[in-house]
Structure formats: C-alpha cells, structure tokens
Image (tube, rainbow, N blue to C red):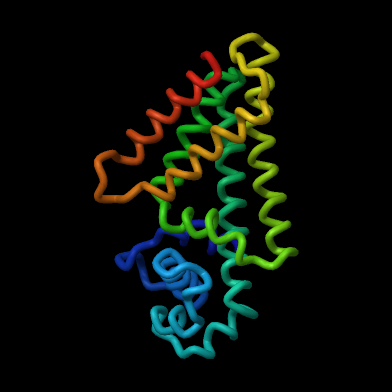
Length: 204
C-alpha cells in the first residue's frame, strides 16, 4: 500500500488507469488542495474519483485517515530522497547542495501534493500528527548532520546548525506553496537557485 502511495501525490489525468485506492488518493489531493481539509467532504472525494460516497470507507476508515496515509507516504518518500542525496558524496558542501536541490525540485514538481501534506497537518489526530512529526524530525536530522559535519570541518560557518537546518528546510517546503507549473521558472531552475542560497547561508 505505501509503495503505491509514494508517487501518486502529483499524478495527472493522463496517467494510466488506476485502482480504486489510487483514484481516491488523487481525488483527495486535488480536493484538499482546492478546498482545504475541512472544506472537503467525503462525497467530494468519492465523486471526483468516480465512485459512490460509501466506497471511500471500504478503503479508509475516515477522511482523516486518508489524509494521514497521504502525509505519511509522502514524508517517507522525502526521507528516502534526502538520505539518497547525502549518500552520493562524502563532501559536506556537495551533500548539502545535492540535498537542497533534490528537496526543492521535488517540492516544485509535486507541489500540489506537497502543499497538502505539509499545510494540512493540523487536521490530523494527535496520534497521527505525532507520527508525521517523527518522520519530519528524521529529515531534519539528515540535513543537520550534514551542516554539523561541515561546521566541524571548517567549510561551513553558522552559530546555530540546528536553526540553520530548519531555515533551509522551511525555504524548501514553502516552494510547494507558491510554485505553479505555468510560472516563470522550471523546477530545475528553482532547485539550482535554492542550492546556491543554502550554500551562501552557510558561507560556502
């Protein structure tokens, strides 16, 4: 189930025919992005998926449960992405640049889904929100580890590696809020620019 959810957050209508769970997830992402979690009904989601209102409960316990599955799968995918970015090099400067570029590109390409799973977390139950925050903490630790290694080796300069790491992640996440496919810049252009910004923040 999780593997199937990992890449569905920004699928388009031109994608191959999907199973019921995937259709519901796509419809939920679009509805949550357009109306917000609280402004979306289960009927909105099931109708957009071409299914009956009762069909959602065959696959998900609730609308909140569907949002949690999307958020959990999306955050796990990003955690895998940043770990892979860092694993490609032993140099902190390259690690940081690759991580930021990959992170930002992903949030631009999948901006609709990323916007939902980052900005609708308040709608989750306390237990589900805690699970998502735990994954977000792991993402932060990956970046913070790179920053701390860079500071220790003298290639980075910052009085507070933790705060700097949070600032860099916040900048990347916010790309999902403002990026639009019809806008001025491509995902690659935004990613390359943010790479430069992040390195300059650390004096590299």
